[in-house]
Image: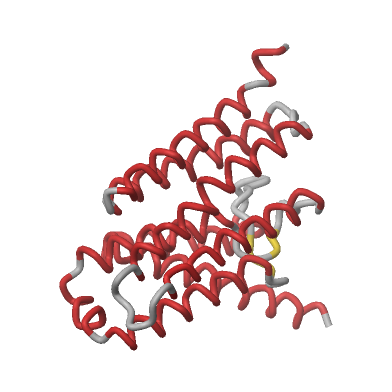
Length: 237
């Protein structure tokens, strides 16, 4: 049935639409509404994959369309965010253009993802939606939290932190580190223990820290993935 087959592509296009809206908000440096638009992009990206698996319609066209949409929503958007966070706040001219390394590396990751088979249990490297979530939430914290102002005033410190974040982000995007997947095959505790633990701690952090928790959750996700992967490797020997 044609209508059934186009459902995943509709969600992909909604992801792309929200990515474009996010860029529009960034033009006026409205990081808050840009983050909301990016959050909707992430939701639509998840629904795209979910319905593709549900109706068993993982077509080549859908795969290519998804990568193109992700490049805008999760490749260009985080680079613009970092560019704006660095613009006119560093002592070195034009260094803010290094923010677009994120777009370049994201494009490489999406291309690699297209030619490799994915697993339900793990994902290789940091996904572009998670990377975008980190930078979107970080932008709000930096611009809205008065306690961060002292870092902004120390331009060298601010520059070093931001450059380190850019390079770390680029490394994680194309790294061989195994990140656990959120694809639930069933709801058993034994097979989804790591997912349940992560979700419970994430909810707790959100209740305590609110918006500030989002970058912490992303960092916690990376650390948890590395820890459980190494633990699994150790137990296999």
